[in-house]
Image 1 (tube, helix red, strand yellow):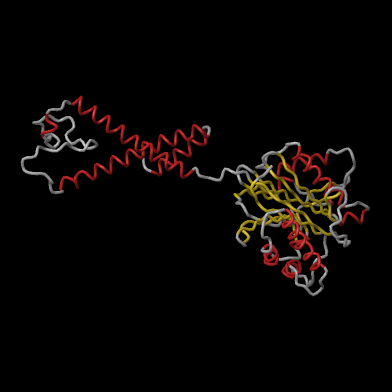
Image 2: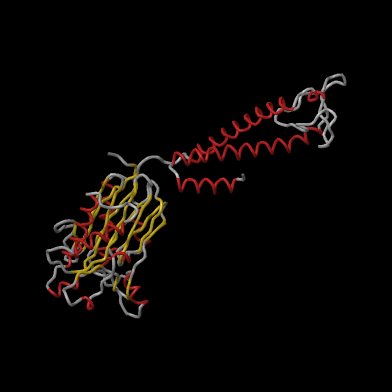
Length: 402
């Protein structure tokens, strides 16, 4: 069995068995592979040995052959069928004795292979067994300049967010209520806030699968649809889940809220905006009866999903479009460089700094914001920041502590 065959068989076995059984299969396979490699190496080595000059006197008897090399194993003293004559030391040994010695030799080779296998597996299994967690702080601003003032739940203006934990997962989310409903006498924050509170409750009750954040969003949305209390509005949404034991981040993003992951001062992962057309993001909606076709409404299953590994010290920034429309990645990275440790106070300070800077730029008429650049790309002559509600959840991956 060569190395490629071993890894293929090991993966195939691991897919169908328990981790303990898979490890046993892997050890046995590596043992056989190691024994085969060692046997071949010694077989190749034997001809080279035979060419070396003898280091004994003329009168010395023939030396014993190496126990792992058995030329002419079942030959008699006069048998020349395999082209090799037994040495004098082999001539008096019976086939059964030679077979017994071969068994001992094979046992030693297999034992050696098993040791090699365990050493290899030991090296491969030296993974980080610690649980990870997210140290998360929030900050935001509503368009009415109420700095950091929250409505019922965690809402900044028409934005909403939540931070929750349950056993083996940390979960957080943001939602951006569509302000146009205010023209019809509807408070846009009611929909986004209720959506996020429902997501939070599902997490705390354990009614979710860490690898499926879109499931959290879907269940929450359909609960709102069945709610007896009338609720109108629509919202974008972004859910982020950290699996503490697997060290994996699972995300679901619908619309133009989103997240980015920073490692070593660089953005290594980020969400993509989902837009129907300029400034019209995908959104979840509940509309009055008979108005279904007049308002955009997307399915929660349309959310973009992703999963990837994270490392200790990774920074995760989750935010509504009020941040990304007013600050470029470069500006955000400059602020994140000021984060020196993973304690909550430091994370809170940087979250506030980022949200405050975005809020100030949103009202700068001479600033060429990312939103203004996007508008120009779509044929609109726009300059300045984009006044909007801003919600920032800043997280850092740290070792889990009770």
